[in-house]
Length: 111
Image 1 (cartoon, one colour):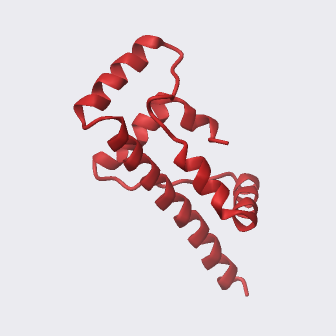
Image 2 (cartoon, rainbow, N blue to C red):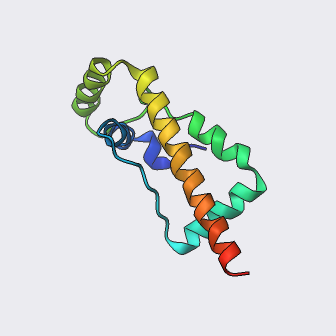
């Protein structure tokens, strides 16, 4: 399933804005969540990719309908939902790959 924050339009759009501004998206997790994520990734890496592929700014929700309308207007101004989704999914994939790579480096260092 899609991570709950990725079903909220503000979160999706803020990830897009972060990347568009030239910043790297960096993800951190509490240690127990990090272990759970890495275990799930080791068990089925395709599941994470599938969940990220379902991120869609068009179906993301907002508590305030006016917020969604305003954000979707901005989405159209920057090239549309397909472009925003592509940028967000790529950034999330890179960020999650970085989490996995850091974990692998830590494992090697602890051997």
